[in-house]
Structures are given as C-alpha cells and as structure tokens.
Length: 384
Image (cartoon, rainbow, N blue to C red; front, top):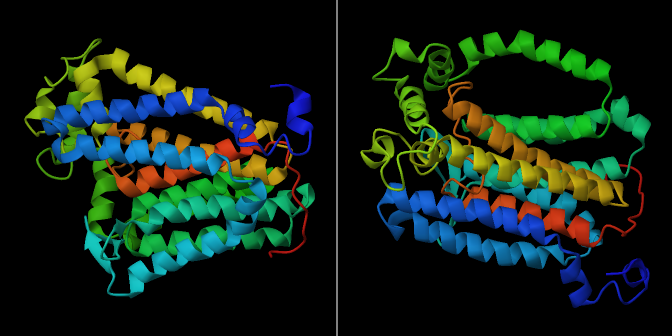
C-alpha cells in the first residue's frame, strides 16, 4: 500500500484498502490467546462442554465483529462517545435500582434482560475510555495537565466507580478507577496532582478497608497478607492457586493432567484462576509464552495509538490498551498471591461473555484508529 493511495480522496474509503490497513499481526495474537483459552477450558471442563465450545464460538463471532468495527470511521466513534458512556451508566443504574438486576457471587452486578444476561460494569469501562478520549481531544494540554476543568473527567470516573463499588463489585470498581487514572496520566496530568492523589490514597485505604468494606471483602484483603492463617477458609483460593502454579514446573504436567484443576481443588478454574490451571498443565514455558503474546498485543496497540493524527484516536487506543494491560497485571498478581482476590479475569483466556465482548469491541476501536489514523477530527470546546 503506497502513501499516495492512503491519502488520495476516494481511495482511502474503499473496503479493500481498509481491510489492508488492519494490523493482522494484532488479530493473530488475539486469536492465539482466544485459542489458548479454548484449549485450557476444554481441559479443565473435560470436553467441549460446558465452557470450551461457548468460548470458541463467542470468540469467533467477536473477531468478526472486531474486524467490522475497524472499518467504522473515527468520526462516528467520536460522536458516539458520550451517548455510549451515558447508556452504559444507565445500565449500571438499572442493575442497582430495578428488578432486572440480580445478585451473583455476593454482588448485585448482573442485568437480566430476559434474552441475555449482561454485566454492565464491564461495558462502562469501554464507555469511560471513549468519553475521556473525547473530552481530552477537545481540551488543551495545559487544561489536561492542571486546571479546574479536570473535575469533569474526575467526575466521569468517580460516578461509575461509586455505583459499581456499591454493588459491591470491588474488582470492577478498581478497574474503572485504574483505567481512568491511567488515561489521565497518559493525557499529561501534573505530577503534583499525581503525588497528592497517591498520598490521599495511602491515607484513605486503611480506614476504607477496616470500616467501609463488607466483611468478606475485608477478609480477602487480610487473607492476602497471610493466607496460611486460614488455609481451609478464606486462604484456600490463594493457596490452591500457588500449588497449581508451582506444581507445573518447567514444562507442566501435560494437557488434561493437572491434578489441582482436574480434581477441582483449584477454585474458579475456568474464570479467575484459569492462568493457574494453564501453568499447571503447560508449566513455566506455557505461561511465559502467553505472557509474551500479551506483551506483543500491548506493544502493537501502543504503536497504533502513536500513529494516530487525532488526539481522540491516540487517547482511545491508549485507554483500551491500558485497560487490557491492567487486566493481565491484576489477574497475574492475584493468582500468584501478590494481590487480593478481587474477581478480575485473565483477558480472553478466562470464560466470560461480557468481558470478552467489551475487550473485542475495544480492540475493534484500536484497529479503527489504525485504519483511519490519517483522520482529522474537529476540536470543540466544553464537555459537549
């Protein structure tokens, strides 16, 4: 593809040109993770049912959706940013305050629409990235660094954070807060504000843990510090995960031969602790290989963000990449006992429809930034 073909009016909008501009390396890496997820779900489930086939079919469908979304002009993503954020926030409110919301795993974080069940907290992360990307696109670097207008993006982050934390879904609330904080940092937030925020967090976290968290959430945090204090109770999950990770050794026990997962000692082996199951069966080599693929996805996505002519494109692609990287880092730390168990899945490896849908739509946006990287978007002042 020549530069002239990309810049010539009419040529750039041809379907064949757009498909050629998709970064297929990223598609392949995502497919490798999704395929690895199907393999390990087949193993821990003892066959295609109950998880592996669903995971594979969902991933195939969402890959097609991702490629289709990559063809959508950035101006439509830009225009949809605030409406989508508002829609996903409404879904969170419906979960909390209408009979459509129901409790699962101790949190009222699912929305039953009859024909489908959704976890709105997953979608609001994507809506937040879009909304923040649009806001920062329309404001100057000085305003993004230090100004009273930063109260607006802080509010965009704070409202869904509080609503989701109230459900209570600590893992999703934490991801919302960290995603928003990462985007503010990437936008050039003043180091004075970053230092003040870190100091405030250090002061607030201890009383929050002791007096605001629910008992089971507090136990998770305290157990993380010393899981052996209650090996048959609150420390069970972390201990079994560490056993699975260590027992895999260098090359693993082999496909379908992981005792922790096959004998069901490992809890939530198809969701939160699927990385432990993979490490037990495929060892250090298998788990490290998956982490390398994750690293490749992050690096390619950041490269795509850097190529965008529009600030909206750079911020949107960077925000999706930051969210993805946070999923990997928090789940990895969680299963290794380096962070409390907060219910954060390993992206595209764990079983779960809402999480997969959100991430694949997000990567559709990343690829749209790649395909339409020459697109200039208007600068408009104010929130709207």
